[in-house]
Each structure stands twice: as structure tokens, then as C-alpha cells.
Length: 212
Image (cartoon, rainbow, N blue to C red):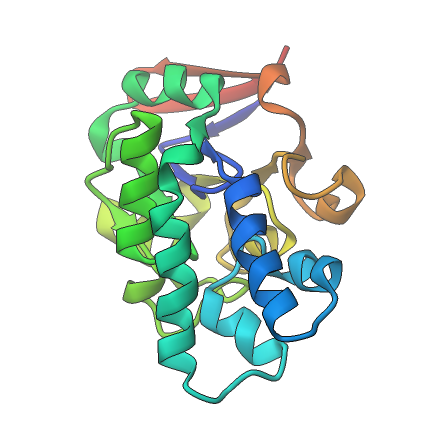
């Protein structure tokens, strides 16, 4: 069992199933630029758009290209849905005991949460709020700071290798969901399991996570 005082969620692939929407935008972009679609998708999940573009060697008009890609995803937000387990869990958690840390922009994450019928947390750390995106731990450390919790008493729920790496670098335990990446790519996590195998209980001011 994992026992903590706060849970920090990634958004895409954890709270909302947005994989198809993400891939539509990036496959379209890859085709436009003559790049292998699968190779682009392999590094796009769980990272800031600008970081993915820079890794692909794209630096011309970077801000405009980020805005165009993010705009396409915002326009497609209605296609996403909440993971049922996440929708059931969030109302059970004290509002000051959970946060969302995402590589998307504020506009993108709030549009997806709204489309999925999920609440916007009181602590939301987006790509707009950090100098360095995942796998840098900045976002998770900032969320812990805003919640007033020690990093070591926070649990991260992630779906991407970059996010797992960020959580570990922040000194946090991390549960990885194999929703967008196979389990072997997430093996560095404290625990790898699908949502349906996870049980979360609120015990006073403590949050306990275990497997069924």
C-alpha cells in the first residue's frame, strides 16, 4: 500500500482519454512536414509541445507553431472523455489534497477537463507555469509547494515515461498507468497498473492506494 497526504495527477492519459485527439494533431503536423508519424507520436505524449518540436529540430517560428498545434487540440477537446475511475475518485479527495500537473497549456487542460465533465483543481500547474517541462521535476515540485505538502508525501499518477522521470526526480512515488505507453516503458515507476486494478481510500487526512 502507498500512503500519502496528496495526489498529483497528470491530465492526458490519466484523467482524460485524449490519446486519439493528441495523435490526430501530431500526425497531421508530421505529414505536413514530411516526418514519420509514428516516430513523432513516440515522443509527443506527456511532454510540452515546444519541447517536442525542439527535439524534432523545429525552431523556426516556434511560438506560432506551438499555438497552431495547441489550437488544433483545443478545437478537438470535445472528443475526449474521462476515465471512469478518475471521474469516480476526484469527488472523494479533499480539494486541498490533489492537483493536476500537465505538459499542456492552461487553455488546453481546462478545455479537456470541461469536455470530460471533470472539475478544475484548486492547484493546476501547466506548461505556462514552468520554465522547464517534464522530465524536469519543476512542475511536480511546484504543485507540492502550492498544496503545502512535502514532495516525499505526494503520490504522482502518470502515463508517460517523461512524467515518471519527473516524479522520481522530484522525490515522489509514482503510479504509472499503461494507457499511452506499454508497461515496460514505465518500469521505473513505483507501481505500474491499469486504473481498474487500483483502489484508493481516503482515511482522514491520508490517502491510501493499493491494488485489488
